[in-house]
Image 1 (cartoon, rainbow, N blue to C red):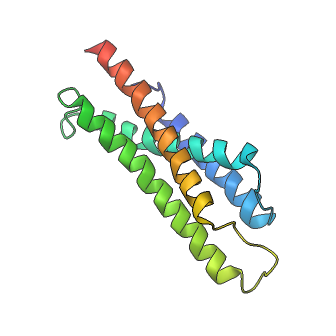
Image 2: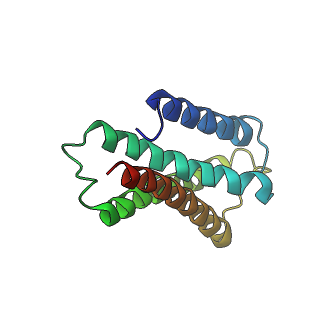
Length: 140
């Protein structure tokens, strides 16, 4: 496998998610700067792609990765973006329903913020897919 231990993927992703949940939702700290928001979305996209890669690696008889590298690249990146879309939807729902209770807190739900976040998720997914397929190609 391209990462020697599948638990590393799961634990790192859960730590990433827990950090963002604690930072944004428990401490009610608004992340206005790119210095945390963009890298966290890139890592989130990378992690989402790594989860799909771990599933693909564990079931090689279902996913014929070695035969269709370009389709595999599209599948991995699309999964990372899908998880990013679900995250943005969750942010929207959280902001819509809980902003009534806590008026001073608001996720900056602008179109440019959402598109920037999705582009960062896409970047993380592309990087993970590219690394995985390079390693896979060297094994073939």
